[in-house]
Image 1 (tube, rainbow, N blue to C red):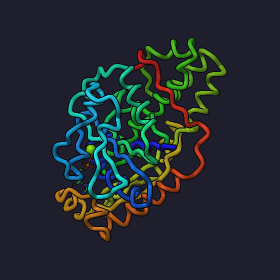
Image 2: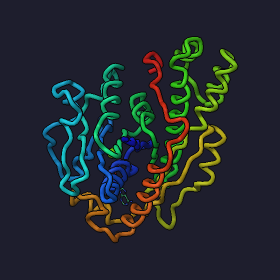
Image 3: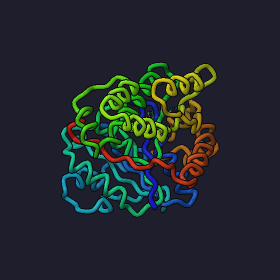
Length: 309
Ligand SMILES: Nc1ncnc2c1ncn2[C@@H]1O[C@H](COP(=O)(O)OP(=O)(O)O)[C@@H](O)[C@H]1O
Ligand SMILES: [Mg+2]
């Protein structure tokens, strides 16, 4: 069975793509058949991290139906035989009107890929596409740096993802989804309140949906002076979002990372003993144990109705 791991962040430039690329590489080394899929809307660059400067086919070719199968755009990566890449698309996904049917088709085809793990690099920010692609995964990974704006943006991102996830639970409940579809919500409490007003039983469903929302966090570019108060962030999220934030790892700020990017190789390949590489290996092992542990009870994430998008 394929496990999808999405990698998202509130802010760009925090190291999402390098985290995704290195974790993909490490899972491949651990014997998993891995696909790294670049869904960074408008900022697709995962292929460059592997030195593929002009991919012959990209996700655009699939979305625009120039090829029928998602497998057709799979690109081998010379760094490891178990690792394949789905190069991202230029602007196709950025045009915010990717129709619902195409989004659904894309997600369905991802699920059908022959792979053990698909790591999906999601664009920064909180567009509905970014949130939907983030939420289509089995496991959610978020990345932030200790920079206060990055932490704040991460908080916003997780909050909006949680709201969208709760809304998605009511896809088939007509009265509730109608009552919710045209509204903008600022907090989970507001959503649950609105849901409860429409149907008291739905309140229970909303709370249960939230309990299954447990994003993982990588804090990247940690240095002696700058650390995130993870406990405080966890507490804030528990209070205002309801979900638990689980720590996946802390990756130090490391010049080896910049050298690796310039050499078109994941740092774990370029300098395997660099501090960042060692921390990434630890994070990959934790991720592996999460992937191979039994599936959470609430793993289904139907997409919310299009009118909510
Ligand atoms: N741990 C780190 N130490 C030093 N530089 C880093 C680290 N992580 C990322 N970087 C630098 O940040 C740049 C942006 O990372 P990237 O993964 O492209 O960000 P995002 O995908 O979030 O926009 C990289 O090119 C790299 O040079
Ligand atoms: Mg990126």
